[in-house]
Amino acid sequence: MIKGSKKGCIRDACRKKGNQKSPPKDKFMEKLVNSTKKKIRRNRILMAVLVPVFIGAIVFLSFQITKYNRENEELETKKAALEEKLEEQLERKDELENEKELIRTKQYIEEKARAIGYIYPDEIVFKEKE
Image 1 (tube, rainbow, N blue to C red):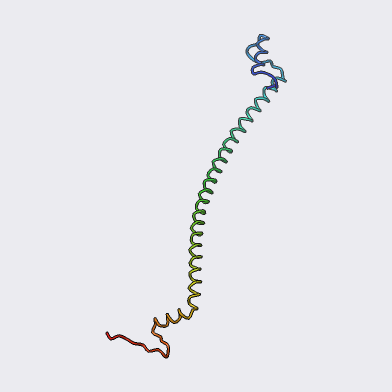
Image 2 (cartoon, helix red, strand yellow; image 1 turned 135 degrees about the vertical axis):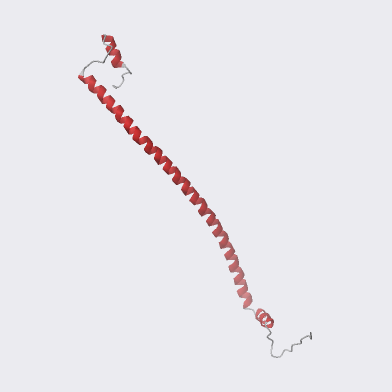
């Protein structure tokens, strides 16, 4: 269509001249009408191709976002479990370090030796009769 023109102006121009069947057969007008029809047809084809492509892209991206959110939640739960396990291991480390310090003391060594039956050379052991 020509800029600034209103819809149906070709028909109105024809009707004023008394020719109600078809628009004027001017070559310029024919080219203008044909080129306008081609543009409209090209735009329709372009829209018929682009709209499904965009819809497909949106659907694909929404599935990807959902997938990544699910993976993120799984990783967060694994992270929380690993952090809890780390805390347990740090507590166990502290316990072992305390036990290591205790093992090095003379009192602990004597206690363990007496448990398996060792005595000092100058000690006398009294046993009860059964």
